[in-house]
Length: 228
Image (tube, rainbow, N blue to C red; front, side, top):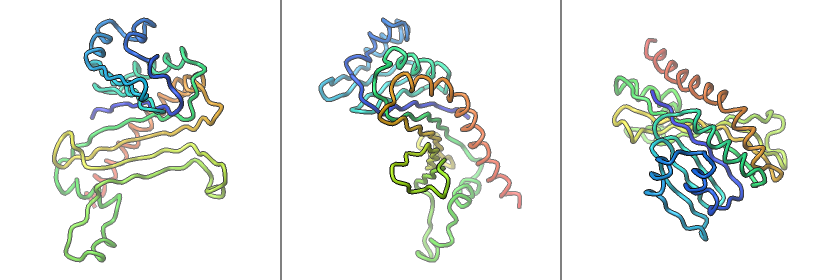
């Protein structure tokens, strides 16, 4: 299975700065990447928009959110690119950072596909609410909060959080699901480009390994359930 990676930062960015030409001038992307990016460039600087694509990554800056995503599989190059951008913009305010991975899983049969949804969301209660009708998972999001249960809901708390989003795949067709892993890191009002750079460099590999592990564990649970 292929994993793609997305690094998302929330803060205050100047879309006029992070352009294909600037990235090439700073030796962060190649000349061919810059040429490809210019062919897809969409920029409305006054509206806070900068968007372009290369052969291996996409860049989106919309208002206060910046996203770098791979288009040909997760690679440390996206980590290094994101970290280098923030290294060159150390004073840029960054309030939160998300390290994300996503994959599309193809099951061998319709039974396995439905079993996956049934394990995550048992359908018994829905069968009682709608007798004779079929209920299935359209979209499911689960949050894993790092805050101790005794502190949940505390005023001013901004917890580090993992989120899993699961929905039918629109990429590889029938009997397939799309699973996304998001690790949300709040940086607060005092956060900046330097903090974002350090976080990306320090947490990328651990989040990549965790996403791979949890995706594999989810599939294993389905296959084990099918042997009972």
